[in-house]
Length: 464
Ligand SMILES: NC(=O)C1=CN([C@@H]2O[C@H](COP(=O)(O)OP(=O)(O)OC[C@H]3O[C@@H](n4cnc5c(N)ncnc54)[C@H](OP(=O)(O)O)[C@@H]3O)[C@@H](O)[C@H]2O)C=CC1
Ligand SMILES: O=C(O)CCCC(=O)O
Image 1: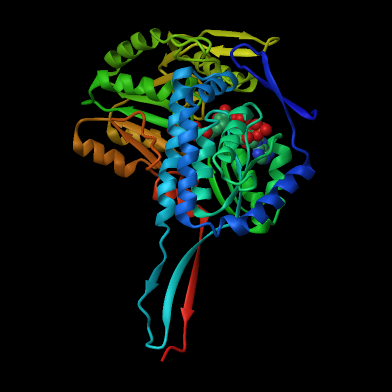
Image 2 (image 1 turned 90 degrees about the vertical axis):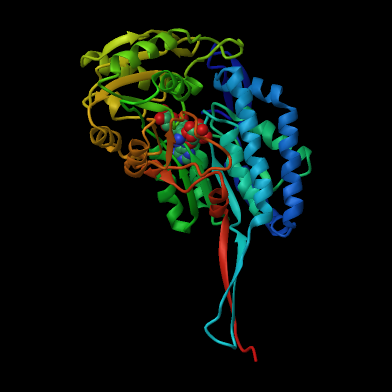
């Protein structure tokens, strides 16, 4: 491990830039600065904080093309998706710029004539964030925006693979006048930076998006100083196509869900359950559409599916595909890899597998890759049982035009985000987050600012 991190283009393996690793002493310094800045930032009035956030968002939108290119270069995602992510990232800032002005307290009718009871809201303090490589902009802004809106200060450590987008976002925040110590970044490896964040008594909240094991570790390590935590962790989303579904529409939505960022999204459909009566038609139509997807360097406008992030990601996907094929899954399309270990790039071609079973790892674990495993069911109860049979509970999708079937799925699926005839449910104004081992807390919507707010209760007595 050196003093710099090489940021590589996952489509070619070429080094894009070397960024300095922030020393432990400098991380501590950043935390002290953030804590100190909290004293003044938390007193800036909400309208002023809101105005600064709006300026930040406007600047980000102005720089869409530049930011999108950096994001594609370091993450590999297709340019059209990077542009979409810049807009999505800015939408969190816009939403929380408004929410800043709506952090209301309340008065409670008193039990005594001589008392008044008042509830006020305050920012929790310095927030430390750790973000992943799959959404380098949006995962940062959906943490930073509510934090800053609430009056918290913010230090982020981006994933080692994708620090460049984050660095630019922080620079843009400073350019529009958000004070330098109110939003800061540090660079480094998670295993080194994580303990500094969790051990520091100055950090009052940890917010994290990434894998479930790291989330558990951060939560455990945050216990010593009783920090607030928000954890947005792994998923294993089922996508259920009921007997009466609009098949063509379900096919398009499956594609939208599954191949976003080459399947490297925590809410990607990870297992597709189709009613046996329509399974043949669905798989034929789906396979025909998957064949049309263009794999390549994300900088090429026509690319639909870019590389996977790195060798570790590739190994996980490869192992799951080979496990399924070895156990009897039928390859309808794909099962093709294009990689160069020496150069360091890894492409997994979109793959459709049928006859997958519960005994295959692809049906048990998050894949984070462009693979669709198809299985069938007879009764909606059976689909729900298979869908819920996982420690994860982030997103689930179901396709039906029968309202009774839809309500049955809505009421029985144990997931925090549901898409009913919708493969793309994310929105800044909606609460994103998971149940079970997919995490704690919600990001987006009014719920997304609550984890950055403390409640203070005041009882005033002695009133004549
Ligand atoms: N919910 C989601 O959106 C995501 C889920 N995942 C899941 O996790 C799998 C593995 O991906 P991976 O990138 O390794 O995920 P990680 O959880 O390891 O990485 C996400 C972030 O956590 C940091 N991190 C890693 N180890 C620690 C630690 N010990 N303490 C504190 N922070 C840490 C990383 O830093 P650094 O980069 O320096 O290691 C990165 O910033 C994926 O295949 C996918 O299944 C991954 C990313 C996002
Ligand atoms: O955690 C992720 O994988 C990113 C969330 C994507 C989204 O907000 O839709």
